[in-house]
Length: 127
Image (cartoon, rainbow, N blue to C red; front, side):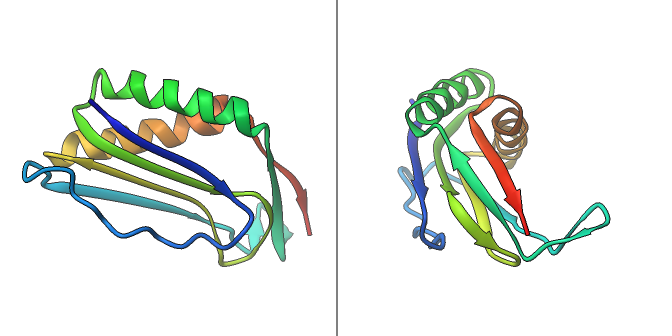
């Protein structure tokens, strides 16, 4: 069974310590989405994020369960920052723990792609 931790914060994201749920864990895949200074040809000082949090949490739990049906993973931690996020700071953190790297890497990639397409989290301003 997949253990899920989903959180939204307006504070800078602090990476949680890795806690291995079993001795079978051999892969820890982490992704950080970092606000970049240039998007296309536009120079940015940061991005502003908003979310419909209740719906986003529900959607993420369902999405993670669907992916876990195909990819044998033990744990997923998802943290997304809301509000103003300056350039060079993390807006998204995702950690996946699994027995093997293949499922963990595939889980991470699919989770990010589907989150960006389907979960109610928006970049609403640039400056």
